[in-house]
Image 1 (tube, rainbow, N blue to C red):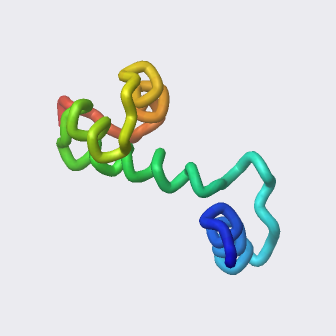
Image 2 (image 1 turned 45 degrees about the vertical axis):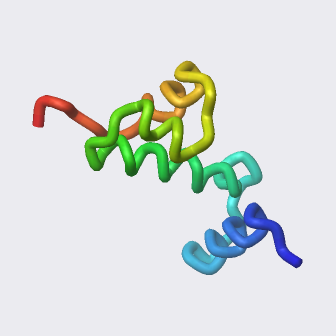
Length: 73
């Protein structure tokens, strides 16, 4: 059985034709990316926290800080 992390890393190899750096992608990258996608689609932080199973606003805020999201557009 393969772990989600291994599947993600193998997918990067297939897409790029080269190995990913260990710190570059992981199974956790999917959760962070999903949270950022939810923010971009207009969901509020409480909905994102419920979807991802997070209890800490601080943790989710850290993940969302890099999302390309502008509320003024």
